[in-house]
Length: 617
Image 1 (cartoon, rainbow, N blue to C red):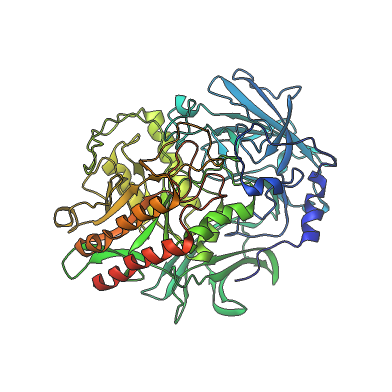
Image 2: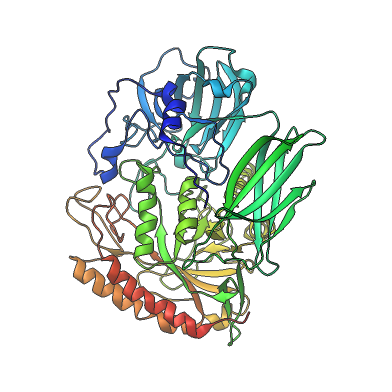
């Protein structure tokens, strides 16, 4: 792949105007911390380029110390004074923010900072980007409101060019309101009174904030969809202010070798990728992608990205049972439920190394899939999955909970879809649409899951059919462990602690059958828990040996389930989270409860069993 890094010299040049000579920042509270917390630099936290699927060189990272204040919700104008400093991009409730305070539905969180634009931004349009802000965000530049955004899990941007001062400092002010579980919006596992499987609220900025200089004519977005059967990748490019005679070219690269190039002429182009190297967990090969806009032979704008030649689909096996296929072959998919929480950063990993760590360990443990549970991650997380060869099932974050359903072990939950208000439905649809659109280009994502365990599940048939229409290139898991409807590609059972499966003879003729959650084996480890007492797992053990013995016993049951028609399974979970101690790693990531090699050895039997159940192509 092309190197996607900014040199240190250029990085310091671009971020130098944002640095603070001195800082009194320190983590708040007394909870456990990860090893990477000590590497957080308040003058430049998470400095890496935040959007690896659309890379430009002229940008400035705005992470660092900002002024903040928590004020009554009635405070709708920019405050005259602030209470102190907050370290962006860590949520205000987190230790790494340096604040560690809650906000709630009756208050708003204000941010402010100034910066000086570098000389490279002169005569350019300036875009202000946010990786994620939870939940309702109003943005002001030099006192002028430049935009608002609803949604805590999707990236968004504003063109702030018209609000910039011609010279001198630029002031950015942000107002955030987040009602947590007092509102109908998607909020995942957040709750104002954390307990059990529900965790600390996350309010405000929790991913990188940055600005980028672009010409007046620029590439605003693109999508790429591989078709391995036709040996092409379809690329659709969107531009702003394209002029007559401008030429848009798309090229694909295998390292330094160009393998295809086409000129865009108002519609998607199909780049021919002959003898394609197929992406898979065992061979995560990525092609580089380059898109340029030129005028009279001179490059006006250029972005770099990547793509993979891979296909996710389903087809019946020799017994007529639907199987989940990768590149037209049955690959048993097995991975952990990954919630993406951190004791020091909550939703935000303390460093980029930490962000990658969980994926690396998951791979070393012999998993080939991750279910990203009712949360999204920064773009770099998905790129690491792309690079390392990790299949991803992406959940929609839940919200507006309250369904009644049957949760007895082994029973598929059945409930009447929740009657949500038009406002609640609109909020859900808008954010789910943005998530699917914004994360579309990551090849590691192979499954979308609109609902989990009937949490706020509504108009199931309508939502799932809309999801399938929105992205026909992936499989749709209708409702993981929730209110099943006769729609979608996957029938998903949750069962604790034992592995089980939906009856393939009843459900497997039309849909892939999977075990969406099981396990939850707990082992609290002294000195590594969120609290000293009252931690829990679905079944708790006293030491690592007991835990592994029980886990290995569970693995022995899978070959028979795979033979009967099971296509995938998800173990709960990657790490402990707050009072849950059923992770394969502790919440602080300092202890791995079962050695990676031991896990990989027992997991290999699952994939070997799958080889005898190859589906028809």
